[in-house]
Image 1 (spheres, helix red, strand yellow):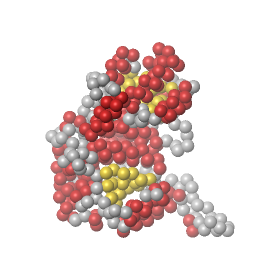
Image 2: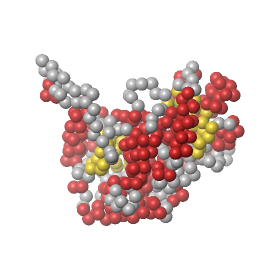
Image 3: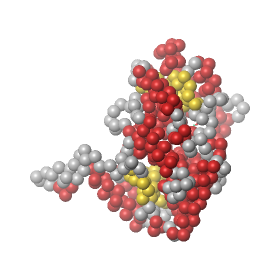
Image 4: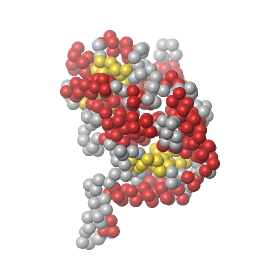
Length: 426
Ligand code: PA5
């Protein structure tokens, strides 16, 4: 069975063996706490066992709804922000060809007027369906976008518009649930005990992914395998290892982590990771700042800083080891561009050497590197990646001593904004 692995070769020399051993012990304890639901934010731990708990009926329901939506449309507009869109976007971007027109597009991800007006124009003459996702049902960005988009849907399809709208929200309360019930939209739930950034394996992530034609069963299979691997009983599993390593580094002054990749299709996996770790850990004056970099592109922008800037940063590299040999360098009779030394090598092999050379250079420059090795990028492996990072995040947040499942700081800008906008009650 293909599994992701964690390579510690480029980090171990930065840490004292005893220190790491103590943190590995702590990581295992915290993993137990997560499983027994006795730590902070225990009411939000539904995601821990979700891959093994999700039923065939639930999967079928999601696939059926996605199939129905596909049969009546050319494009699905997903309306949601933060954890309500990043999981599906990460998966769809990672598994779709680079140069095809996407059939899943996103709205409500910011307050960009130009974007929204151009989106309305773009879909006006297309057959479209809407999937609005908001666990609270009150978030401003998706709510504003949804008001506009559903206006267009009613204008175009009349009362039949209701069959083209799916609402994914919490099962009990909120403006979105009230509206969906009143209008008769199909509704699906994000369980009460699963927070937005941990919701990729709920309908919030799975419905848009299924609409895009991606095999959600394989994705869940990958997550299930990683859930079983990550139990505290399996002491020293890779989720515990990653949590222990990053906390050991943090204790030694490394307070900025760069998640880097050499695979452009993983850009939104990086963004998903960034939200997961940023919102879960950055609180009470603590936390590792989560940054991202795309290599080799950013070796030509951030490479200098990483190599020789302040020594408070470490890297976690997501590296895809698959070498499909789709393009190999051909020999030319006259070696004008000086590339004949690469004859017979594929672009992926050259990318691999860029990775090996960069890791060595960064380590020599004083930047520890943790490497997460992906044998290939497919549904099964991505399911593992998502679950691995979520599990490690829960453990890591507990080691840090914070509640990894709330985000109280996000409210501050909202309070000011609502006051400025004159929202009743603010
Ligand atoms: O992780 C979280 O809980 C947040 O990032 C939310 O996903 C985000 O703020 C969107 O919230 P909601 O789904 O309630 O609109």
